[in-house]
Every structure is written in C-alpha cells, then in structure tokens.
Amino acid sequence: MNIHLPVCPLSARQLEVIKWLSFGKSAEEIGIIMGIKRRTAQGHLAQAKDAIGAGKNTALVATALREGWIQ
Image 1 (tube, rainbow, N blue to C red):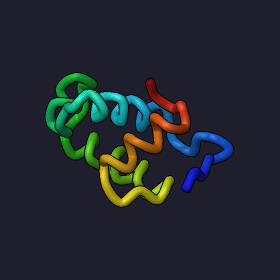
Image 2 (cartoon, helix red, strand yellow):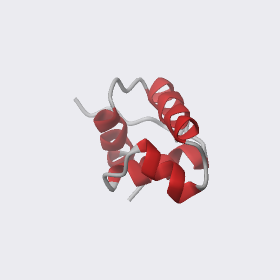
Image 3 (cartoon, rainbow, N blue to C red):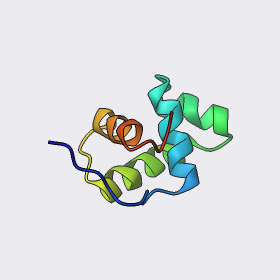
Image 4 (cartoon, rainbow, N blue to C red):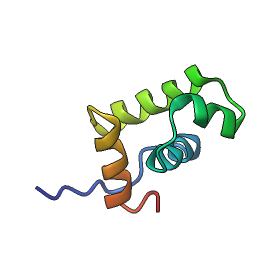
C-alpha cells in the first residue's frame, strides 16, 4: 500500500529528532546532540508518531523517508 500524505504535518523539531533517529541515535543521544532532555526527545517522537499514525519508531522513520521529509 502506498499512501502519500499531502503535506508534512510535523514540526521542524520533530523532523530533526526523526533524522537523528534514522541515524540510529537513541533518545538520550538525540537529547545530547540537540541540547534537549531525553524526555523531550521522546515527547517529540511520540507526538510525531501520533500525528502520522505510526505505531513504532521504524514506521515513523520509514514514512518520513518515503515522503521525502528527511533524507
């Protein structure tokens, strides 16, 4: 199934967290890189998953890559 979302519903901050996640970084590592708390990074990921209906981080990254929101 190939569903394309018309516009990116995610914030720039959420996309940055997803980008780091796609590089294999943990929420703790993302927090250090971005200068935010681990819980904040986790919150961005949770909100992004809710926004696009992804159940897991892998689905979140896959959707962001497929839609061209991250590279």
